[in-house]
Every structure is written in structure tokens, then in C-alpha cells.
Image 1 (cartoon, rainbow, N blue to C red):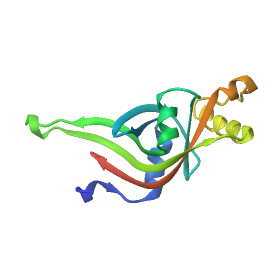
Image 2: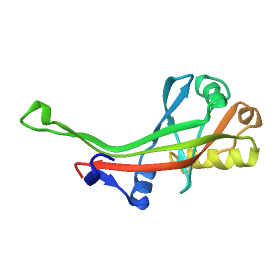
Image 3: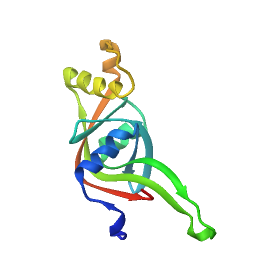
Length: 152
């Protein structure tokens, strides 16, 4: 990291950021063409999860290349200055690399869907089999992760 004074080295602080946000930006690559998509996600302390329809661009790309980059950011804003070129971004951000894999086991899918939905509601939901069949649940095993903050 170029600006070491902005680095977040504590995994506990990184985990706070991951747990604070609701949207993760997921970057994929397909034949040297980038693809970026926002997704709702869950985090169990070591693994990230998201869900999707069984078909679509991100699913097709993940089947060909399961290496992902993810970004999660909170407290976005800016630091104003009298000089236009001295405005800066205020943020706390986590960026990581990992490998995505599809969860096929129905019980595990339900457990992950409960984690995702649980971030937005205290209600308990049932997932009809017909819906589960058409829902992809993806696990991201984190290979590397780093955090950065500025303005805090």
C-alpha cells in the first residue's frame, strides 16, 4: 500500500467494515474483459457469501473463471479544501481477492440465505424448493484482504 498511514492492518477493524456495509462490489474477469456488479452479501467471519439467479453474466463468468476481487466500503464522503486539487475521499474500504464456488447442498444453501436475509430482517423465512432450484448461492474463500481508511 502506497500510503501506509492509511492502511488498516487489524483484521478486527477490517471485519467491522465488512459487517457494517450491506453491498459488496464484485469484480470478475472474462477473457480480459472486466465485469463489475453490486451484490448483497453475508459474512461468517472468514467467508463471504452472495446469491443470484442461476443464469446471467456473473454466473457464466464465474463458471469460466472463479477468481474474484471484492470491495466493501463504508463512511463514504469527501474532505473539502480551498484548493480544488486538494479535495480527498473520506472512506473506510476493504478490498480482497478470493475464489468463488457454488454451493449445491440444499441445507447449506438455506443456511447461507438465512445469513443474507438476516442482515435485513429478523423474520424467519421458508424457501420453496422451486425457488431454491433457481437460486445460485456462492461462497467466496478469501485469499487476501486489506483495508484502508482516510479522514477517520
